[in-house]
Length: 421
Image 1: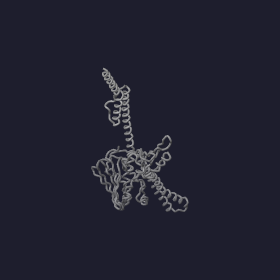
Image 2 (image 1 turned 120 degrees about the vertical axis):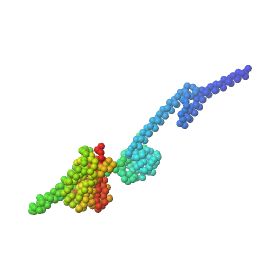
Image 3 (image 1 turned 180 degrees about the horizontal axis):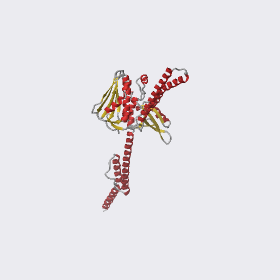
Image 4 (image 1 turned 135 degrees about the vertical axis):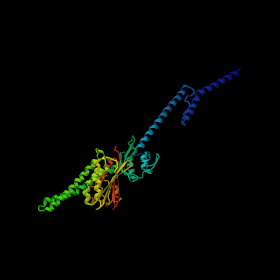
């Protein structure tokens, strides 16, 4: 009888142990398994834990925590993608360096600038950049946290860069790193150089005639016994240089007008054959002075050209002026018009002195002269071809030149056979 009681008691103890294990121990085993799956990046089938109410609340809280964590991960990924997009869109090179001078971030423009792609995070800056002019402002900004600006040459030695270095400071005021921006200032430098050259050239062009004016006026004022021939010679010199100054001023005003934002075109359809015949008629006297023949080659059925007639006339006059100046006696000048791929090509060719290959790329620059002494002797301002180029560009066209030294030069003005936008 007593053994039945013992057996029943034993069964009750086993049942109690099983119940207590299920109630308290098993939830923690399930929780451990759940955390292991989450740690592997898996998505658990359920977060419901067996056992007491607190264990079930732990499972529910864990599910909510995982949902929030994954939402944060998605937001961080999205933000990082947006930052990478912004960095990738920057045309300036961007570099972030930590206090140990290791690269934390750099964008594609920086990688392209230094010919390394991709650059891994943590790469020592010295492995990529060896230019002391770049390293020095970064070092200085890390040592003494304040912005630095330096002008340096790009690794290809062709571009000029402005490097702006800004320190990243912590609460203690010390630099934890720097941000460096590499901005291409080549065009600004070029524009500044052109401006300086322009001022220098204008000053040079004005100095000679003004000196001659001053000298001859002094002679007139002080020379009371000048005979009529000497006086007349002085007046002729003054008039010649006055005409030269007037021509220079007119060309400068014309060029300034073409370069201004207010420059516009009065477009009309032009019969090029009749137009060229009318314009060249005014050149008969100058052509005869050097016994030059002028030939027009424009097809009878040539299409009408949509252009500003007054500005196109200025183009032809400038091209003919150059052709006549640099032609030999008894030479020939050819004006040719042709149509090619929806473009109108107007060219003026001479058989004159020609242009050296080294000078040819620069002939459309303002004040550029192949032979300064000879050009000044012939009365040129050095602005004619620059005016031609700007008029062509105003029509959304372009200019070209080819020449053989000692055999002649051809200048082409190429215009679209449609209205400029």
